[in-house]
Image (cartoon, rainbow, N blue to C red; front, side, top):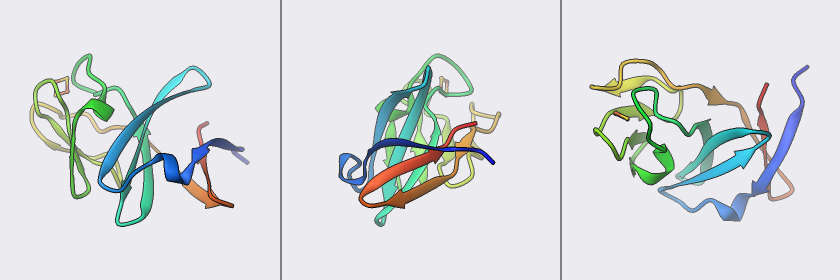
Length: 103
Ligand code: FES
């Protein structure tokens, strides 16, 4: 069983926003859309950019560097030049805290 890691308060992530977190040596991006939290790797799969600095529109995050896009629900690369999917992490909310399955 993959353990759940407590990463932050649910209130630390604002609706229609992305936030970057360093957790256990990884760079993770958290997003909130319509009250639901999603988690992906924060590094764009195309180049050296952090997606938390990008623009979140609906369920798509746009990379700040070359405007590649990913669906934050499944990590799918949805717009060139991003072509490699992004890794996603399962999210659980409990007692106002956000837990991720990072392994
Ligand atoms: Fe993200 Fe190029 S670095 S699209």
